[in-house]
Length: 328
Image (cartoon, rainbow, N blue to C red; front, side):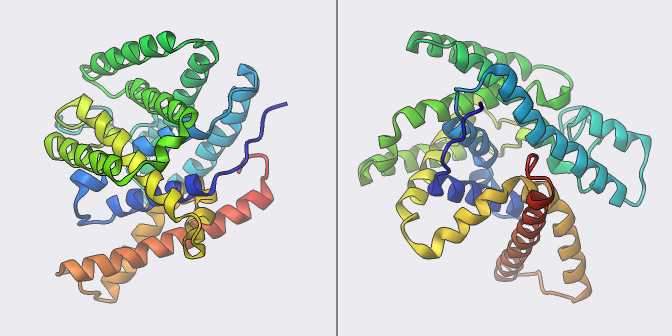
């Protein structure tokens, strides 16, 4: 039988924090993306490796992940594409290809596949492909030497794939980077005491995170943009995720933060429908002539939008879990 691991509150809280940053990054005018946007996607893959078990057979694991990721991908894709006002054959091709665009973002002209509310759904197929490779490796790695060799080979693959002229379907080209994140999460789970470090260690993590973000520039993993240096993308991803986990672990005993843990159980649905909800919110705010000329107005409107996205997504997730418990 597939194993069922107990949920960790601070991990669910961390998922919510990462998702808040994802949603905020999709709000027009998002601030500080060089720092806030440097680790949130990395964090989801890291946390998947952190919480994932290894007792299930390879076949059981693949079937479970297909049920939990690919079926929602098809369902959400169908619903969100249908909602678009100008459906074309390109939209259907985009669902099959599952990438935002065909070429790197700086290439003009480009072919935009995920043009509508379905643009975040690339993440589901990326997680599926990366998880299968990760699970295959983790079932076969029997030593620290094997793990080190895997890290080196994956890093070389990241560098090689980054030279490709096109973005590959289902994020195959960024898969090695995501598998590194998952292996890092798996290893940190074996040494969970690192999340209870003293102030000096946390200060070192903060310095490394800020320095890596400052030197690396903006990251957009959906389009294979690692910033200026892949190594700095890894440093900001690992340090940013560790800092987030340390903070969440320190706060999990406070009841007022449990709402983050509750929302962390519904991240898949919230992640999938966020763009549609953001679009509606922006339309309503434009009709209501909501002020957007100041930083304060932007922050207030962003908080309101994030709360609405999480509320709608959570309610929808609860309904889907009741209707399709084996999928959601």
